[in-house]
Amino acid sequence: MADHDLAVVGAGIVGMSAALWAQSRGLRVLLCDRAAPGSGASFGNAGTIATYACLPVNSPSILRDLPRLLTSAESPLSLDPRHALAHPRWMLSFLANCRPARVAAIAAALARLLAEADAGLDPLIALAEAEDLVVANDCLYVWTTRAGFDGAQAGTDLRRRLGVACDEIGPEEIRALEPALRLTPHRGLRFRGARHITDPQALIGRMHSRFLAEGGTWLQAAVTATRPDGDGVTLIADGQEVRAARAVIAAGAWSRAIRGSGAEHLPLDTERGYHLVWDAHRDLIARPVGWAEAGFYATPMAQGLRLAGTVEIAGLDRPANRKRLAYIARKGAEMFGDLGPPSSDWLGFRPSFPDALPVIGPSPASDRILLAFGHQHLGLTLGGITGRIVADLAEGRPPDPPIADFAPSRF
Ligand SMILES: Cc1cc2nc3c(=O)[nH]c(=O)nc-3n(C[C@H](O)[C@H](O)[C@H](O)COP(=O)(O)OP(=O)(O)OC[C@H]3O[C@@H](n4cnc5c(N)ncnc54)[C@H](O)[C@@H]3O)c2cc1C
Figure 1 (cartoon, rainbow, N blue to C red):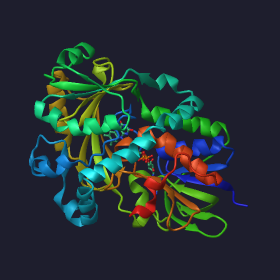
Figure 2: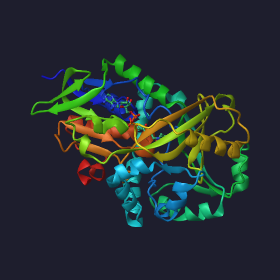
Figure 3: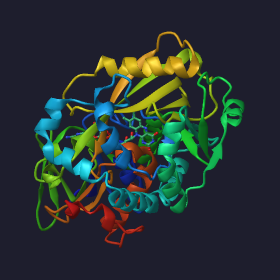
Figure 4: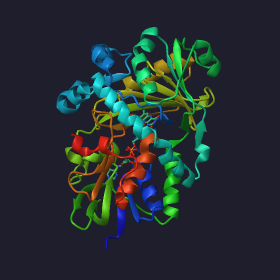
């Protein structure tokens, strides 16, 4: 018999959720990460539990606006041409998924999973005794231009058709809700009932503590390869061999590097995103405010005001691009007036497939290996439900909800 029923590679929100769900079902779980729990993309995100965010980044307007988006210093999107040329499959597939029919299908698949997100996350928050990290105060999207708002209308209509409850609000209501905003808002959307996490890494840290307290095994090591066979899987972790009946690859944007897992053949890339934090401005706003044209959220976090977002396509290896951080700082000053120097900044690597859907399910390499990565802009929101699905699969139950939309075989 293997030492563990399930070995989980990656202790971001996805892997940590899978480990805790599987443990709560009575499985003997080993969790492995090369770094501290919650120190990857899950560390510095915007904190929103964005159950309303079913629209993918792919959008018909990207095709129209691409030249401006890629060349303007004031764009929320940037692309390193060397990276694009080296990864034509991802780029072309991303653009193909901007067609209206594909966007509608992707949004519907995301909406079905997002509808289950709270049911996946809330039991983990309760197990971790982390209710104090959750704030339920809605979320706002703000547009500052008529063109931007009108251009987003088709997306808003699609969102509503998929069951997302949102109220359109005018400039006065926006200013009344968030008096610190110095923007001149055109219109906004208020997502009633939306919540956010004030410190995602603290949430994962508490989940990890609960996992250890319940007898889970923690291994800090880098997994380089997996070798599945008829009885289980051998993982190579910092040169040692670890044996489990099944393994989950939840190593976020780095999942492809794990040889023998089947992940290495999938078109996973990263959408890099940044954040800046101002610890002096802790109470400036009461809820996450997404500035739609600028491509980031301002969120009141435990550490202070966090501006987090934007997309940079430039791979995993290049250092942080100071121009992208300067863009967010400049836009932050437009949004709130002079904030002074930020207290910290961060570059994070969203794990992203070109169709904006995660991969969740058995690997093409072996059904002893489960793949769970590629949650792009929604990993904090969808980590919990992904973890529950992984636990279903590890127990040999049909997954709830079904996962056909997220099958690795779609590539
Ligand atoms: C700027 C920004 C803002 C965002 N805002 C939001 C938001 O508001 N709401 C939302 O839902 N999502 C948001 N996201 C997305 C979200 O943060 C990610 O989708 C999510 O964190 C991905 O989680 P993960 O567990 O898959 O990956 P990660 O958190 O990156 O975890 C992967 C882990 O695997 C480990 N690892 C990698 N390789 C190996 C190996 N070989 N061996 C062992 N361990 C390994 C890493 O150390 C890491 O701990 C945002 C992302 C960014 C960048």
